Image 1 (tube, rainbow, N blue to C red):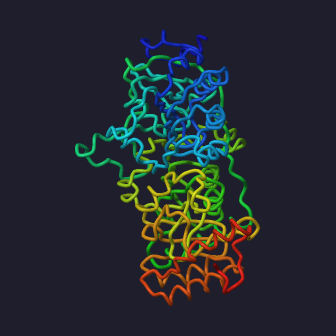
Image 2 (image 1 turned 180 degrees about the vertical axis):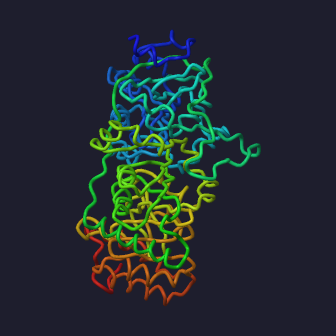
Image 3 (image 1 turned 120 degrees about the vertical axis):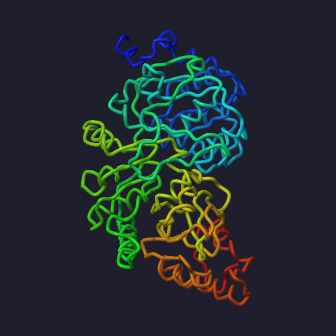
Length: 505
């Protein structure tokens, strides 16, 4: 126990150690919780689990759950199964919770990840009764040192009525020093964020605590859940190859150098695989400014390709987690973790001129992107940070495989079933078939590039048939409105988007 207490260096907090079970009794029906955690990293673990145990013992209550992004340790799954969620925001990625959202059993607010803290700051959403935050220690001067993510933890600590700290002794103390905590003032009363290079530090090494808010400290010993990414396959390697070809054309045109611009890559296997494709490329002295650092970033550091990486979360596979934390000194001076409102802030994204690479579920012949809803109505995970980056980056790039379900689904459709990123925010789309550079092109100029370069051959003629009929209707953006969603209807009714030509009903 003495070894644990040494992680509480602020003497006024030493007597506030409680069990997770005791802390969980403070949570009441109708409260709003702010839980640390971003993409399965740095999430609060013990107190949420104790809350689930209360529900399983027969207590009936519901809470609103705010986080940074998705949670690990099965927290979202257990919360959903226990039926204790009233409202969840701003992002999740758990199948059981996803099903509960889509059946209407609880509410989900899908938010741009840079917006949650601003809404809290403005008092525009329910205030937080308890912030439950994972940390590796509290310093003598009252700084909470986060673990493997920051997410919205700083905003939760600032705006919550009460704070419960989970000090996780399984998280390495070597993480101390890689965090950079900065909080803007209220809108209308703030200075420009003084960040002009990804490797700059502009804040404090931890989250400043109001000691009077800290109601209890719980000790835990549990590693993060490993990420669920899978290894690159032939199609994702082809996507990476086409993206590299596009970047080479940018270098040839004099718009980029071989050091490119700071890179952002979204969460997930496809985005990770695409970034991984840069390892054997000619590009060098790369810098990453992203929301999450996945395996590929550390592979690029090891290969001498990436010099520095800034994000708000470390989300790694099991083997990569062991390797990185086993030799963390090797990476320490190449990493910074920031709050997600800073990692995803439009002001900084625009200033740094990022190349943003995010994943689409589907896109249409004009370049609108759906990244959240299957067949227009069923939520998958959420928009995450893709909108923060796509609209404000130097290059907003979306990648996806051209088909799914063995070819029964085309990822390129006449009209996306849900619009997350309008044609105005999408610069380049890439599939394993090729890429389409949409910059400076009118809607009618985009269509041939998207169909011929990105659509799977089995669907190209069908796309052309739709577009040629739409042309007869005229318009800046030609559509056959009564057939715009016919592909999605066909999949629902017949199990495939492939239809006989001249029969798109």
